[in-house]
Image (cartoon, rainbow, N blue to C red; front, side):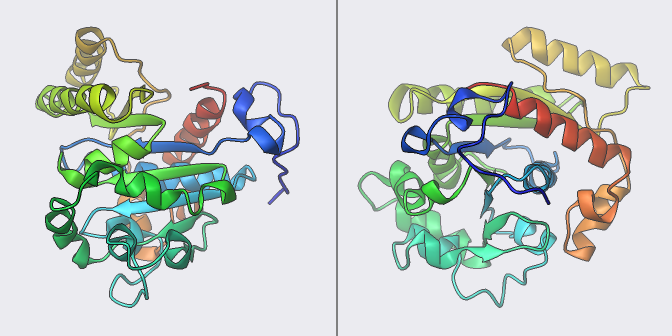
Length: 277
């Protein structure tokens, strides 16, 4: 992997990724959709691995009690010493919960204990800002932080949207996609109004996309027109390779690095680097 200096000049990249270290800002992106099974975790793991290949220092945060991201990157949720649950409850600083992964990005893992975190946070003043405050402990160490949200619009997802600069919405192009996108956008707008007015929606990322079907193309066009959302390209095509990767504890960029899916995620990652906030 080529070395990377935050001081180096990279033409075409966002200015804040090229400025002097004294004004450097970490880019924090939430990957969210309240609908499950739309490849949120795959997107976080793949973009994180792609940016790590490009020499970026990346932190992933697993905010799903099912701990799919943690498992997918080779960590056993039952054996980690500290998790995001401990961080959000203020038991440890975020830095102590960071674990390395073989694919390059660092990870703050999740455990099943995270299922009870929301109940604890509901009693706290300023509960929407807990994750943002916790990440201040590590933000200066990373070029990008990717937040893998749970398939819900609860306190954990609100925390992710409040902590983020930007949000990506992975979307499977099927009939029920409208409902999930609409409800998420309502939540994003509430967060923009009340907690994080600088939050930017980068767009929808078509996942498990089958360009051969009229339905997939029609749903994508309708969502784009109805909600005035950008579409991140290229779309991520359906592939069995994505299902095989988690069993190996690696991202698809490692297990099937020459596949169409891996190539698509690398291209999305490159385009996002050129996309200013």
